[in-house]
Every structure is written in structure tokens, then in C-alpha cells.
Length: 373
Image 1 (cartoon, helix red, strand yellow):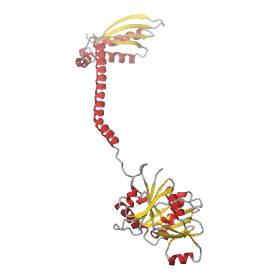
Image 2: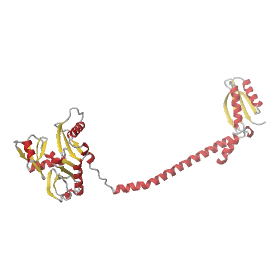
Image 3: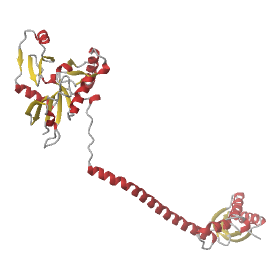
């Protein structure tokens, strides 16, 4: 179980006065207490783990108000926010110099609001830090008193408090006489005070160490994690290099496939094997101008003729390596095909034709067309 160290903050912290009252709580009981300047040694780690540290803010430095939760609030957090605004309006000082904290409503729908000067918070934290202690929480000492209707007096450390219900006062005779009058005042036994300290260690009603004064988390450096991060950082360039090498290998494989496909197409087009360096030249010559016996002019002429004779269809066209375009033409009647072949001959193409009859009755011709005389 986590142990807790509670110590009382002085109203006016001075570096030359390090003494403070302290209580050490474990397993639901006060196991040690004292008042001495060596109390910071109690803030060392326990054998079971970290120590929870709570500082008690003096009653004279913190104004504690209890108000009914606003009926206009739609949530406990909104009720706490409304209580903080009300505390600002009731304060005499500049709101910018005040630290105001509200707790969520309790079962009785009461909102506790603590108001303290920013300067006091800074002085307490500076004093504690100068002694090597950084409290996890700062709790108003007034919250330790029971909240019933009877007046009680309690000596907690060096502070004597008088209060009842939600009104807690420092034990100043004139103030107590004015507020208490002739009402009986019960003095709390040490056991009751210890029980209040144990309750505060388990769950503090209100914590001043919030907002601008919240405790910053310590960055704990794990050497094993640092070593892992260093290895990861060192491996990043290697992984990047490996990625580049894999990309280059894939590009090379793709390039080899494209080269092989290019050679195959070139061989099919030109009718002879070709190297990748000469494939482009061979195909340009093969598909080039009519002067080189290329395919493009012959194919263009055939397509122009087919557009002129809409009744003719071509069921097959192939280009041979020797520059000859071969194909099969079909039409309802032979005169239509003859007109197309005669037009090609007039344009200077050499045409051969072998007619035959299709099974469906159409006229068909196996033709070859090539450039040249």
C-alpha cells in the first residue's frame, strides 16, 4: 500500500526556519509523527515504492467557502465553475493575483471553494523545494475538521482551529468570541485528529495544486528504452538504404521485362531478331515511310479505302516482315471489293487477290498489299 507523508506549511515560510510538523501514514493509520527541521528525510522513497506527499495550507492563508450547488448548473463541473466565479466576485484583491479552486459537489450538493493568493502558493512551493520536497497535493488544513453542527476545536500541528459545519476559523480570541459566543466547544481528541489525517491521505476534499500550480510530471529516463531508441535511430539509415536497393532491384526486373517484350514485338514486326539497342531503329524503319516499305502508309491506304466502301469488312489484317500487309476482305458482292483493290492499285500499291466464297454467301478475297512499283 502506498505510504503518505503529510506536513504542515508555515504561514510565513522562511528558509532559515525549516522545521515543520509531519505525519507518516501507512495501512490506514498514523505510524509516525514529529516536529523537527529534519522532516524532509521522511520524503525519501519507501521500500514498497514512491511516497505520496501532502502539504497542509494554514487556515489564515486560505479562505474556504461552502455554497449550495447552483440550480442552473447542468453538471457537477459547471456547478464548480459557477462557485469559482462567485468566489472571484466576493474577493477584495485583484482576481489575477488569486488562485481559486472548487471541488465537485458532495452528497449534500455543497461546493467547497478555496481562495489563496498566488504569492502564498509560490512561497510555499519555493520553501518546500528548497528543502528537497515537492508536494503532490496542497490541502487547506481547515478541511480536516468534521462538518457537523457542533463547535469543535482541534490542535493540528501548531495550528488551533475552531469551527462547525462549513465555518472554520483560526483560534483568535476576539474572532472566536464574536462567532461562537456562549456555545459549547468540544476539543477533538488526538485519535480523532489522526483519523482526519488518514482520511485526508486517502482522498483530499480539495487540492490547491492544480491549474497553474499543478505538479509537473518528472521525465524518467529508462536506459533500456534509450538504448532501444538509439538502435532504432541507427537502423533507420540502413532501412532506408535497403528500401532504395529493393526499389532499384524491382526497377531492374521491370526494365528487363520491358526490354524482352520490346525485342519480341520488334522481332514480330520486322520478321527478324533484334537487339534492344537496334529495336527502335528497326521498328521505325519497318513502320516508317512508304519509301522504306513501311506498314503505316499501306495500312492507312487500306483503311481509307474501307471507309469509302462501307459494305466491305476486314476479318483479318497482318503485317509480314518483308513489308507486305496481308488480310481478308468480305462484302455482299465482288464488285465492291474490286473497286477497293483498283483504287489501291491506282495509288501505286502492288495488290494480289485470291477470291473465294464464304459459307454465308458473301464474297471474300485474300489480299496482299505492299508499297513499291
